[in-house]
Length: 252
Image (tube, rainbow, N blue to C red; front, top):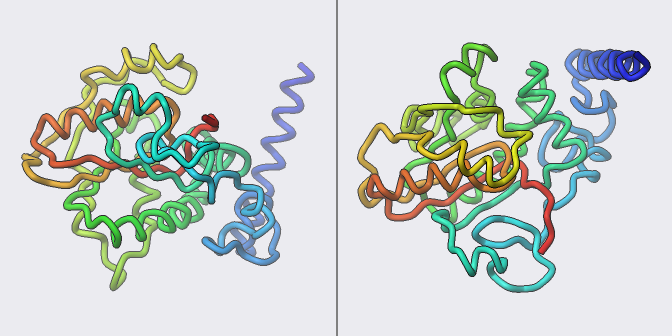
């Protein structure tokens, strides 16, 4: 009973802060109206300073934080993944984890612009440097879309301001489909995730010779991105990279 009361009190506080941020234009995480962060006017600098991993040295293949100057972690060297490069905005921790979880599972829709700003700060430099032919968001299963009422990742991507204010012609929301969704993977073990995601995706177009960028919100074990990357390569893609908002914290 005590935990329920604390949970209700915490959620009430979050709702109050969210409304305050929406009304006065303050931080969507803490409600403060102080100095804006370097990447988003919707997040204050104090909350942004608490984000970890933004400048971390990462494995080029799986984006895990490295403590050495090697290009790849030992796991990726021993078993090269189907994804060539993976980029992450920050660690899945603190304010970023709070925003993603509440946005996806508690309809904290006012977090979408801040998450879009975070994604944009990593995505636009990638596009400029690597010039992908196609950007493919990881698709959501239709039944889950009906349950949630929207596609969280797609809504975040629509917040991004591209050149001339127009949507990027490279961004293809319908380039792949989700065939099944065995279980919510957030509570699954790495081995369970790999089994759950097997055969979960199909692409809807010929990818012959194309450089594909997959986009997702969170990279935990890589099972989802690796499965979709394998499908893209089987459809003829020349290379597959990945870019995520947050990378689960593991240091190698």
